[in-house]
Length: 256
Figure 1 (cartoon, rainbow, N blue to C red):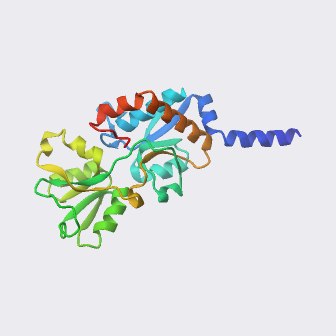
Figure 2: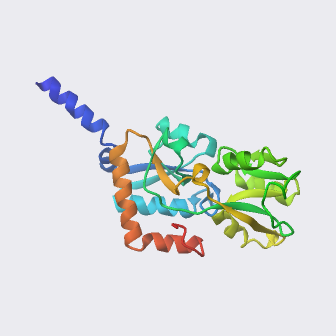
Figure 3: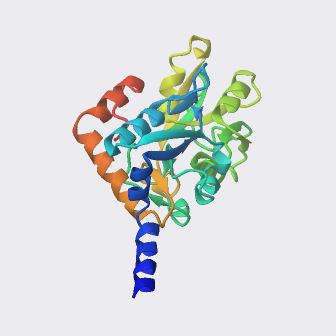
């Protein structure tokens, strides 16, 4: 009987990650740190941005301490599965492909993607961009979409480790446009050195590639943690905390 009780206790502990985290008072959350205004590295080396503020608000609601971890995008899901951290808050789109590997919370942001390039560009169709070069972040939903939409139409798709490097090549005339999430387009408007550029053309949001919004990723077995994150998310949406964070970074409702 005692052995059975011990086995049952072990199952309960493994199935209650959120409870274990609450007892430890720590929740390790990964973000990229190279996707402003969603996430970035401050001059003092700390992480900041919309995702970081959302993560801190969720931890406050759950009454646990946030430990933020900077992780390159290509390794962010492998790092979660390797238990380097407990959750990902990095504007990660909820897509069927990713759902095969991780579990997602309810969405905490919506949005769409578009091309960003010189102001003389206005048509984003494959025919209009034949012979041009489009930059995307490697491993992103924009990469998958651009390859499918433009790759066979005579448009070159060039991959970069992050959007900041892609933007540098845009301003150096090495690429003709960068495919960005809408929030990055609004962020670029704040930079006087980018006055010669603009978002243009179609708003891309095909659910096949762009999913149903962005969510918080956790390991599939951590269902208790997932439930607690969803509860915390619902709370910050209801009490105005989400809106305060949203309005700090965006001139529109990022949730839609």
